[in-house]
Image (cartoon, rainbow, N blue to C red):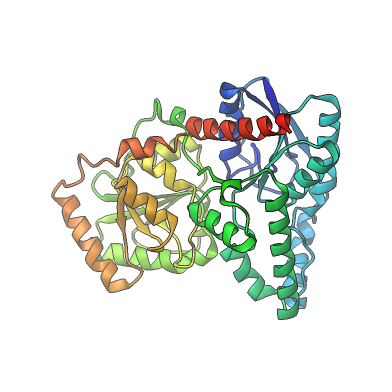
Length: 415
């Protein structure tokens, strides 16, 4: 079996990303044994130790800590950044992980016969570890961008607020140059959306065949024995799973008001997980907050709902990870997402729900028609296009990644 060193900072028990776990779980089925280098459990990041149950036996995981800003100083650090309008971090706030991760990876590569390097960003520090290892050990390197970097809408909005224009321009230029260098040095770049692939190609003139789209997905095993749980049997239940960014709040509040008015107070909007915690100071008659629960319980709530809620601001063109679990759950999606974004493309191609307008009056008309249809039992036999949905199962995505590894490792051997 071939071996791949897997540089993946946000690996369980760190919370919020199941992609790496899915790859590690299924890659051995397709001839690739991952050796993981991840962040230590001691880092200042939310954790879910239930995720550890999903790691297969025999997977070597090297957890590496790094120097962080102490919790008691983080407020002052943030204050200094915003008030002094300076930037301390390149490539990102995880830059102090570079040397510890590089040292650990070197030890592994000196002991093990490894066929390929795989890095996953963000943090973008991981890519610099991979680039250095590629040069030192002359191994093929596949770099994954789970998030855009130079074209990251949220990052760029943050820089607009926190950096003076000359420093902002300098940092953006530095990011763009680094992103282009990564794309040219990596044997293959993986992205999770079609729009990101197109932008990397246009920005850096990277050949399209060097960029592959491997989307996020869902794990079928999580649904095998899942039983639906309806929180409000006498109401219309609309569920939102997971987290959202602060920039989403205004649209969420608009949806809460409109859905309450249109349903005549008979619709309950249920936020589960980190998104619920972000709404702790919001009081709405139709809002239920359920803080972090085991993932299987959150999925059971969603499976017992009538609709699933997807909300993104108009500038956000990326694909939220929750959309794939929504597709597998199979309940109609109410989506406030950009018309020209990849999330809209997926929902329409899967026939998975409704794209709502950001304009309040039009949203009222749309929800009114949808809720009337629900009252008349119109969604009892609802189901998205299953063949389309199946392509996003994590085992199939791992197979696609393994095929990419085979191609790159095979070319390296021939060379």
